[in-house]
Length: 143
Image 1 (spheres, rainbow, N blue to C red):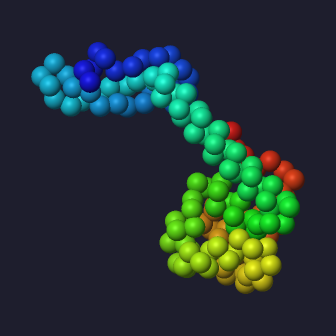
Image 2 (image 1 turned 45 degrees about the vertical axis):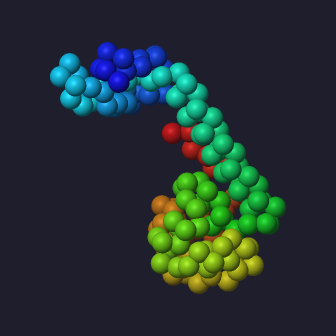
């Protein structure tokens, strides 16, 4: 795509706090790759919004699962941090099957403090927030 063909649909979703858009790669007059700022492209913006809506639905489903006692807070925070059991296992230094066991409230309630501390560290929260998870609150950040 040529520099002058980079989409510039005016959507605020693609502007950072400095008012700059996303960086796209395009070719210049000499057919060399260069970077160009883009305000966005409507189909791409629609797809991104839909993807984020799906992410928020998964997070809400995880929150409800914790509230209903089907899952532990580990499952909720894994979803919130956009992880899967394999990624979480690698951060925790555990096997995926161990992580999946920790999704069970009965197993989670028996975890020792160092394991809970490691989970809290991985999720970027306090241990108390993990242990005393309030499933009635909405934890989705709109940042």
